Length: 545
Image 1 (spheres, rainbow, N blue to C red):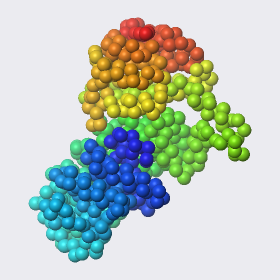
Image 2: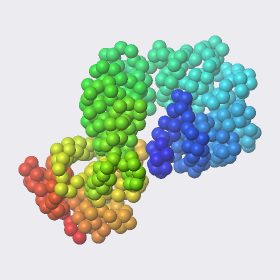
Image 3: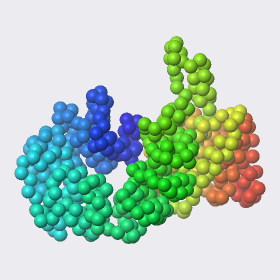
Image 4: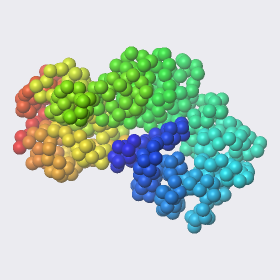
């Protein structure tokens, strides 16, 4: 989690903060030293993060592990800076209530906050007794969406008030009614409340699972998460999971994968093992990887898939290991990791540990950046990478050992970060391209163009790339711009055929692994493409500095 918080990637930071809050809610705690480190980091993010979701989850983290002396000033600063954002205001009030044990200090910004908002926000972290007498009577037909969301959060957290919003209606009745609210965010929080509150069941859900596909992405995600973990009827649950795994929305599929982190039953593997093979979004794949790691002892094919995914390295491996915590699989995977032992200690197992470490460091690192923006035509870089991994796994003896790491849904802010972190010798882009730019992704899945001169500038700074492979349409112009800083650059003068692309990749990298140089490997790759299509083979160009 510390690594993720240091990543400068908003989505990864948010996920790490969510995981930390979840663990604290389940009763886990950090050591005093580690708690202080996370407190400082959360305080920094609450004030300085640009992404509002990261700020909100940093404040939620402070409410879990922060101290008045350590981060109260950070919470006050976040509250003042984001006084117009109701979600951040609510999270900040909740954090202050926890830090001051219900006695929230008077601040200029808190005076303008409605009493109902202040009370509901504080009830997320302290008891009604700490706040004094709590008597709310909220008309759900008249209340604004932000107040209703706060109330649903309190219900989801099960703060032990059976008639939170009105003395005549219990919380289950309120949630059922709000599940049909006009505001999609209110409906989303209603489903979340049923998911989180153990006192609530599916009978309190006012939306039919049969209507899931007609709901907005955010509501789809929560319905799929809830259904995957709580539907009792095995046929109904299997049908929902099967349908949800092919929904076009990444947000929805991500919600489904989150639900599977808490669910396994006989027959589930019939869906998940096929799904992970076709899933192209990295956010969803890491959750599926964690699912396989968590339930690896339930199904032999799950263990095999977890081991296979762990071999990809990077985020995928980290999530498999996270899922495998406390399982025999964890020890099995840890044994495969090269560890630098104390060379002068008695515990160093002869020379094998050092030899394995040297072999690992001697491998040529290939970093694959894959992007498929939602607003571009559908292509399958995951298929290319998957077939490449299968082919390379069939070459156990390699004169030039290669190791691969892949980043799906690659964004512009990840390029330099991953180059510095992974230090690859070969950089491979797979995705859409056009004359003068490559199509990376924004956080919400839209196109983020990377112009040729900017990529060239990145490579001018990095300088350790031996070969740049641009597996994208019309990438020759980008390749020409990058050539002054890379000895070998592969681009295309035309469209890249999605069917023949894997052929070039696996023969190119197999040839390198067999000891051939880049020019020979290029010839082998294009010849393999020519077997299928001579026109497609002619589009490939190798530029040599």
